[in-house]
Length: 300
Image 1 (cartoon, rainbow, N blue to C red):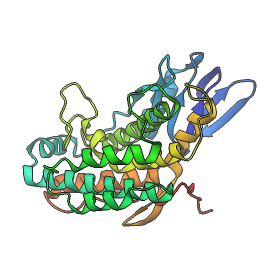
Image 2 (cartoon, rainbow, N blue to C red; image 1 turned 90 degrees about the vertical axis):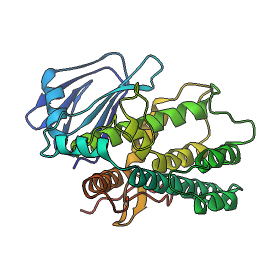
Image 3 (spheres, rainbow, N blue to C red; image 1 turned 90 degrees about the horizontal axis):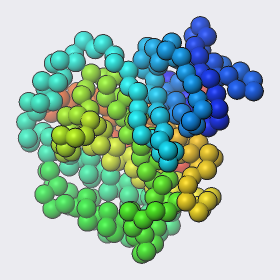
Image 4 (spheres, rainbow, N blue to C red; image 1 turned 180 degrees about the horizontal axis):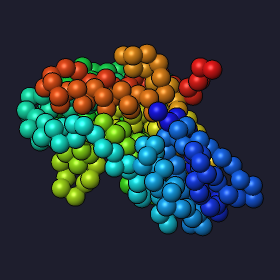
């Protein structure tokens, strides 16, 4: 499984040379395809060859494109052959409501727990209230404790004047980080034979990533913690350094039932547990617990 996040923010030509991505700029850099998890194209003067796209599909790499505002606006996902694709689609569509509601409750509970931990790590108030919300989450979250927690959480983390719709650096950073994780989760879902449009809770007919929007929820506080602990570098738009740091969050350690690992690896385990849930009709989801912003150290 790839582990590198490659972000390109200057004019470049991308081509395939044997088993590596060749990045032609003033000099040529080579990155083995097998090491790459995601590639972010963050400049209008980047060109790439068809063999690069084919390699991205072959190696399971998520390729992001950014729009005029430099926010991710699209992702190229591998169309991987999978022995259980059709079976899993039927299982997703036929999933019983009790199982779906319990799974969503698990996601909401862990999301709120991570929000409380984010406040602790950021040395903010309000974590006891969020802990209380997390303990009270019921199947399907009929009391909308997720929404109640969010109303408390963001004002405690970013201040009483904070609104998610405002045009400000922190919101741009949150949107960018969320988009990176959303694409990485969609990549994992496709790789495991799951169909991103068929969600547990999110069910918009116009959303091709409903299931990714379900599974991203416990990962969001990782982005929140990073943004809250970094002062704005500009008045509005993100700098290239800001974007690189947000992409690098995929390599930050989280706690999983299997042990401490990078967020990118945690996504793989979370998706695998979701696939098992659909296959068996019961069981539990493996979801990340926030532990800080320490980057994962590879064992050599």
